[in-house]
Length: 223
Image 1 (cartoon, rainbow, N blue to C red):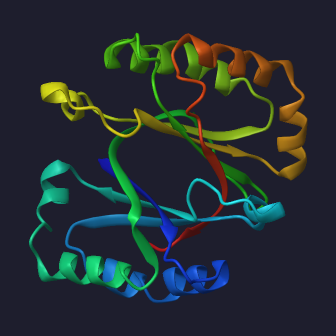
Image 2 (image 1 turned 60 degrees about the vertical axis):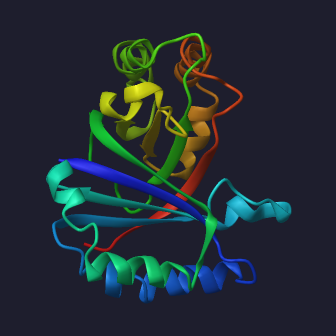
Image 3 (image 1 turned 90 degrees about the horizontal axis):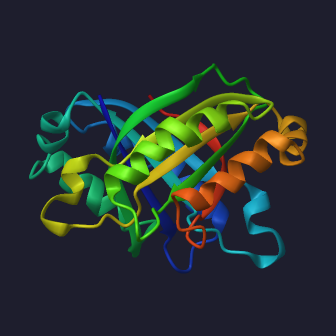
């Protein structure tokens, strides 16, 4: 199974609440018509992401799952996909919409409870490392460090596959980390832990640490 991560900023002129309402209640009506769609999550940036007038890296992140690449490509050119893209014009800024096709690697396979805190972090490798080197370090070295962070309930690495780098192509990011901590209190405790400090220290071994945007989100499972 593969996943598509799509992140975007709301259409100019829309309030955060207008964006959330349309995405949550109207857009799924067309997305659920896509042939081959297996699962669909919406991730709405929390109110804290807008504190003090901040604009987060994205207002929302969609996660969709498909059996394989053929299943994903099968909806290209269909009326169902045309309807999805047309509907995006009601609430998304088309100039600030990006996506990655990724392969999930589960590091911690727990079930988040209702109090869990979900964070998505976009990763870009160090320019002196090949994709193979960066992805191997992320999984073999960094993953075990992240698994030790106290309160970590679920941790999924979303790796851009090797085919995305063919012919010298470079995706906008090399992957996205998705981490769930048990609760807000657990997240605060983790922030002060030596395990998280070790995880953060390791980032410089394979990542461009100046390009690590993240968002904390409220997850809504549509299907």
